Image (cartoon, rainbow, N blue to C red):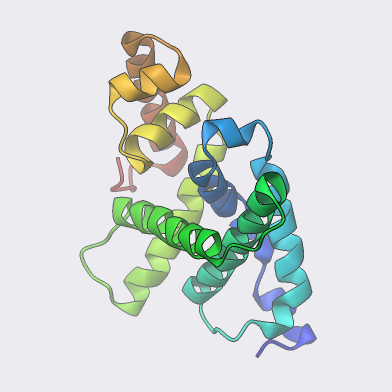
Length: 191
């Protein structure tokens, strides 16, 4: 259990871009008009800060999982608010699964050959770097890269979602991946 004096050991702010990436992946386009991913992330971090003393983990990976669970709970609350007051445990569970699935896709994208503790730590750092780098892309490049590489959409599906030609989407993907490589350095195996 974390004591108040240990709160600085867990800098929650460094997870902002990661949580924002997960929120963007979870929010369907029609819901994005009603719910802002930035607001969800802010609420998640506020709730985590308020409940930090209840966090029982002792690793960055456990902290990331705890934050993902809070994000799923916040999103479920917002979905209930939008779609009616009835508490639907199925919705909450399905959102927790969706958050975990999105996190797993991101992790698989960055997967290392080994799962030793040092590799797990390095992969966690790479995950946070990737989320921060994605946040620095233009909105269109970020959306195209996320849809292609993190949601598995085809160029045709991205084209329809973004209401752009396939050639334009291909350009966004090329420029977005090139910029990510620059931001991450050539050390990232994800690209």
